[in-house]
Each structure stands twice: as structure tokens, then as C-alpha cells.
Image (cartoon, rainbow, N blue to C red; front, side, top):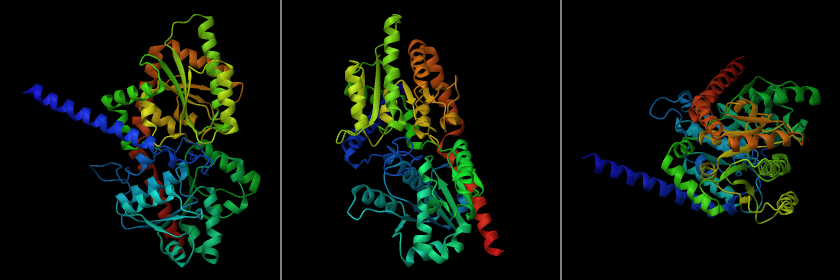
Length: 476
């Protein structure tokens, strides 16, 4: 009796794997939906691929499932009216994170209204698609301007402004009603770039109920920058680390699915199963450090050759290209590869709607964001879910995720960091057990603190406190 049952289970596994593969193929075919941006730390349309990019296929399914099978920490939001104001609606990190919150709130019975402050005049397929996803999940979509938006803001129990840029909506639409709404505003900030510190964006920041930020590093940066540059004080600030969706974790924890995806992607890249793949998954831009990564990778190949080290064939994968319009920076990258004659070792992959297949296919993630780094870096926890070690810059939120020497190795930002990164690449290439152990430790860390239920719990604590503040201010 055991054999037929095992056979049936095997067939189910195979069906699941084929479904995953089909979804991967479909999402790859839909690449024209993508914009040039995907980073919750720089949430305009030129932002990174990292924090929100690629999760369109995961975000739209993750509503309200924190603690599925039991009570949700957000149950107290049932029947509450929540207005979410996004500066834009795109596949970048900020809007997708706000959509996740919308779906979590809808999952516990909250009434959720979405407003997009900036929309192009011409029809946009991405906006049309994402708005319909929200409507399908019961999220109401209102115009950014007009009496309907004002009435909703005044009536709402909670207003969430997403990104610093969304602050422009307050004066432009609410006008004299701004003071009535500020006491119930939670400002969710993802940016970490200096040009967002403008009075026109954040002049009302000191008067809102609270600010929610993705990492302690970013929160400290905002506290110091607003005081020194603008002379304003931050409101009560809450740090909420993000979490992986259940959908991504299901794929990461399914060995059959991972194997199918690994084989498919590697075949498409023309690499063997035993080859060693180091990948950087971000929009291609100088701030994401693809140039410094490729320089370090090339130098690591030279070291391995000079020292005659016995390692598998090594490859670098750059996920986040735009084949339709190569930027000056990407042209520089490709010219470097040609100049160093490593075309057979470096693979440029176009922007894609899902990262899971590439995480299943690679051996090491390189998170090489420069300057102040990532404000969080969701691709990092996604990679760790796939038991991948991370080679990251010692900056920003990466330092709050990666335990140096345990779940990965950190290196300095800038050109001086290329030597450390080069050495770290060689270390992981030559020490298989260390590489695998780091990957397992990273997975354990994700399970301990970077899952969707963890994120829902952290958000719930913030929302409960903000609602209490709003109520006390209204009564006073």
C-alpha cells in the first residue's frame, strides 16, 4: 500500500514543479510590464529591483495570511477604514509593499481605500493591472484629488502615506483640512537618498502620529538628516523589518521545485549543474555596484588561475538588465566583460517578474549596493530563504540582516571594497562546507525573524499604537 501512496505523492510533487515552471515561463514572457525600478529604498520610478521588484506575482497573493490557520495579529483592524496614499503605482518596491499591507488589512476585514498621487496622463498597462489586482481583493481605488478623497481622509481611522514624496499630496488635496488628518497619519518611509530631504515633501512630518521605517540604520539617518538639514524633529519612529511572503517560502522549501527551477535556469544560461554561480539581483545602476562586483569577480578568477586552485567553473549572473534600452552604465559593464574576455563567464539577464527561479539556480547572492547601502534589502532575506550565503556591503539594512561570518561575509562600500569582495568570492568558491553552512544559518535566521507573520506582528504593534494616539488626540 505504501508504494502507490508514494507514487501518488511523487506525481503531485511533479505537477507542482511543472506549475512553478509554467509560472516562471509566463512571468518571463511578461517582461514588458517592468519599469526601470525596483527598490523600496529609492521608491521612485528609477529605483532598484531589490526590495519590490519581481514580487508582483507574489505580492498579489499574500493578503491577510499572517498566522493563517489561527488569529492574525492584525485582527483588531477589522472594520477599520484605512486610507493608503502612494506617490505612484508601479512595480517598484514602495508601491508593492503598500499593496502587501493593503492585502493583509483586507484579509482581516478592514475597509481599505487606495489613492495614487501621481499618474501618467496616458494609459499605463502596469497601473491598470495592479489596480485590478487590488479591486479583485476588495481594495477600493479612488482618484487622488476631489471631494471623495478629502471625505475619505477625514473619515478614515488611519491614513498611511507611503514614501517621503507622498507628502506632497497633503497640501495639494487636503489644504485647510491637513491639521485634522495629521494626528492619524502613519508615514511609511523607504527612501535613503539625500534629494528626498526637501521641506515641500516632509514639512508635516513632525506632526503625524508616527513614522515607520524599514531599518534602524535608515531611521537613524532620517533622524539626523531632518534635524541637521531641515531643522525639524522626527515624530515617534518605528522600525519594521520586512518578511518573506508565504508563496516565496513555499518554493524555497520545496526541494523538487527548486531542482526543476535550477535545471531550467541553468540550461537557459548555458551553465552546468556543477558550475558555481555568483549573482547580483538589482536594477542595473551605478548605485547597485554591478561594476565593482564584476571587477572583483574578474580578479577572483585571476587569483584562482594563478594559485591553481581547484574549484568548479565560476560564473557571474547580473539579473536586472534592460535589453530594450541599454544605459550608458550597462554599456560600460558589457564593454568591461568584453575587454577582460570573460564573456563566457558573465551572463546578463533581463528584468523579470519573479526572482525565485534565479535564487533556486545560483549558489551565492552578492548584495553590492553602494553609498549608504540598502535601507533594508528584501532580496537578501529572499536569498537566505533559499539557503544562499550573502556577500554584502557593510552598509544600510544589510548589516541588520547578514551576520558577518555566520550567514555571509560583509565588505566595505566603494572601490576599496573590491579587494575584500574578491577575497570573499575566493573563500566561498574554495570552501564548499563553509558556503553550505552559511546558507543553512541564513535560512534559520529567516525562519526566526524574517517571515510574513513576523512582519505582520511588527506592523500590528505599530498600527495599534498609532490608532491609540489618533484617538487620544481626537478626544483631547
